[in-house]
Amino acid sequence: MNRLEKKITLLAPAKINVFLDITGRRSDGYHELRTLFVPISLYDRIELVFIPDGLKVSCSNEYAPSDETNLAAKAARLFFEKTGIKSGLEIKIEKNIPVAAGLGGGSSDAA
Image 1 (spheres, helix red, strand yellow):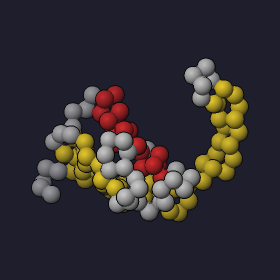
Image 2 (cartoon, rainbow, N blue to C red):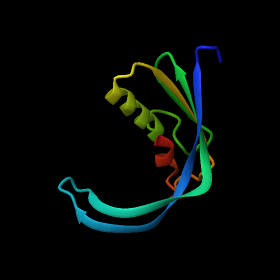
Image 3 (tube, rainbow, N blue to C red):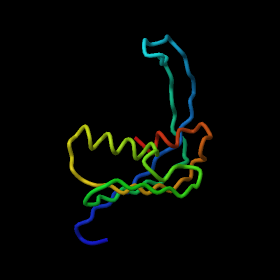
């Protein structure tokens, strides 16, 4: 990596849902919820590398997407769109949270 590149490494925790209460239904078909999520000591490692342009994502788990359908990529694209920031980003995800295990790994990575 050259001197102009910037990199951030973060830990994205798994989380469990302590309770879930459906309090109603919205006009768009989604439900109103009251819930409590608690992080646990299991983490994905996220490395963000700022690049001149474009959006790239890679994931160490073959069952998680390594393309624009990954939730982290969708979140990054929306962030750049809403903020007007003109930059590129490479997202590298080291998956330690099991995929599709109900532990919120994908949404935690995106956040």
